[in-house]
Image 1 (cartoon, helix red, strand yellow):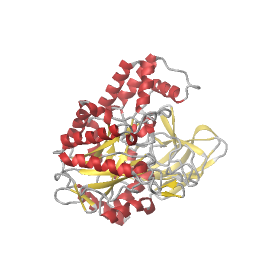
Image 2 (tube, rainbow, N blue to C red):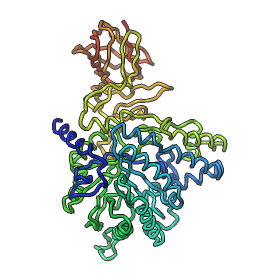
Image 3 (cartoon, rainbow, N blue to C red):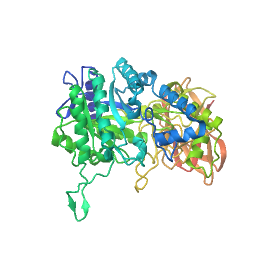
Length: 559
């Protein structure tokens, strides 16, 4: 851990010098005008300019144009336009960027939809975002997430219409993409707080090389991708010699066969990392490219996992001086810094869209109220801030120790919610055997928070009304609570528990003393442990499962 802490300190020093002119590449590093290393720690604003269905709990026909068509069929064209205007106005604001800065991020990645830049609307939104970033001394990376025609076979990511020619099958789309980047670069060529142009997000297309035919199997070489990215780079350099150009390989940014070597002296290789292990092998290929071509690499997208995975990924990346941009800042769900709260009327819309055979069609009035409430809920003022996610990303990679999740000021009559255990890494603030999400098909797959509520650690939390409780407790797991006790003395501590079929056993450990209590079969009930000595001030209380299989909702302190 000493090595990790020393590394984090060195990298923090490099971050402190942000704002020194245009970023540029220097060998395998991204540096500022003074030649100082810059480690980008950023967030992607996924879902703002380009909706992906899963972020809205839409799992069928989740491309943005499909969502729009279905919404028009429900509430009409005029009200659909009202919804999208409200969505764009609320989803990203100055408050979001101010919060990112306060939490410790230093950059923002903007996923752009080309259609918004057919008019001034996209540029106006970008100008506002850039102004907020500049006010916070934060870098902005422009990312073409949806190119004309769509760049991937995964239709949702690029809002592609599969019935029409893709970006790679239509020269007019390719010319429009080149022209768009020329226009973007011309507008922002003198803006030092724009860090880079990420020219095509996650190309994912089955390019084949007809020349390289081995036993009837055509090798995929990605020449069309290289050709178009060279043309885009050339168009950018016609008007802008200042900014870094970021390129991405095929197959969601990772397949660089036939793409390299680089063709520009101010270029960065991006890669994306989802649903794999956080070990040296998972990034070895990109490290080889970095060494072979003496070029910086940057993790342009990652996330959608558990806090344990987040911490381990960032620790791995930063040990190799690789900057990153997480995905996304917010959505309807718990595993991001911000959660967009849903509403019952909107849930009627998604229920019908996802399975019309089982769910009734909502009325136009219900659907309108639901989607407009959702659009307003994307505003930072209505978002749920997940401090556990932020802590896992920005503190725990260097400092895994336990910190209070809430103040926990203890006196007689106080009840703590069991789900409010300390912030910190697994084994420090809690211990859970089920901590991270990998591929479901992987035999080592674990589900993270199987309850899907409140927090994003491995601890399984379910919601019951306005309350939360710990479920699926396994033998050997424990939760820690940092207490701030007002008056020393002997307390009776009651645990609110429930067990369905088999009795469990819990233990309290505080100030070196362990006391056990049985958990009987039955619905929610209180079990008590008497004469628990608490000292005045701060101390750690651990609730351990000596025999699992029960649920835990509350911890009450009495005298």
